[in-house]
Image (tube, rainbow over all chains, first blue to last red; front, side):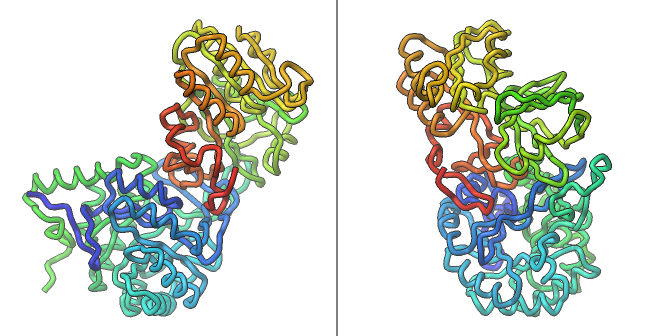
Length: 305
Length: 254
């Protein structure tokens, strides 16, 4: 019997697909719909200390092979977010609270408050490429990543995932720093920093000028990142970037991911993408003699001694 | 980018832009309109196909900047997005409040062209703000007017006019676009009379493509599941007529 269930830092997922932060996850009800559509877990939109409007529009540019976005971390603020978590939890799958902050103290405070909302784990957004003072701006050096993870870990007693940026010369150094800081798992990757210009308007299209590239275009970067991180750390890795079918997820799993997150795939496939990816993974397992996801994790690497 | 072919004043607060480009859309489908350097916002197609157009009320910085654009100027258009009105039956009642008529104009033409008998209720604040009266008449619609101040037609709301029509006539379906309190009222009427209703809703919209969650309404997304919702969905919406999300995703009263 093919088994799709996975366990990450004590969180039991019925399948290895998770909703990635930033997509259909501002409201609890939308997360509930995604859970009902088959996701094994959902991650909230990144929540900060204060309500935040995000960047001026346009916030999205549709490209042939992905999306460029500069939402700018809009969120209602941690103090009123518990109601959304409560509703999301009705989906019966683990809910992971994503947070962003400007320094260690703010992130520690948010981690503690996020735990109180009832989430099963906290994901640290150390990687948003387009919000001044947040995200990748405090997640680009190993020193800061280690320090932020340490403070977040001290402030809460649930698992802490560190979501890392690929906009760096060595993502595995960031992963090692997160592991030293006590992070329980690594999530890789966030979007790649990018820009689109309208030649007719003679200006960048996004209101924020700079945004983050997601979707199929970045999958090879994500797979390579997970592959490198898997060899650099002992904690579990969750793969994200350009997954919209079973084979995409299998690339990440074989690179070393214990689970995957899907965001932009919801744009191209709708919320049915989670069920679709699971069915296709299961079919591959049946055809290739695998009975448990764990048998495939990291098999693309030469045998470890 | 699309090039402006015509820019006309419809009422003191409503203007129409027709483009040189062709874009086919189902009535009530919308496009995201980018005024470079200012803002991007959703607008329903008021003319579709050749001579594609949008009709908008000047409300904020974005539409004010749009209003200053001239023939030959170019603006960004992406879409069309969302679903649209679907003609159901051969005798229909269309109810528009204010600029809501923008999305209904092309529907009235389509329904009449397909042979349906179309009663059109146009509600406006005052006589000079009535939109697409002549256009609807030319399409073959039977026009009924209400104004808040009584300067034309019935003094009162479009829902009152719709209610008296529903008492006299039997319709196969009702179609609505306008203020949400009007849609709530029409939904109640449709439920009482046992007829289906399709209503086009409006929410703050950022991505327009079903991912950012800013237009969420009880787990549905106006940009992708809508903007047109039918009675079953509308009745299940606890937030309808009560709350909407602001730019930060906070639920605020409508």
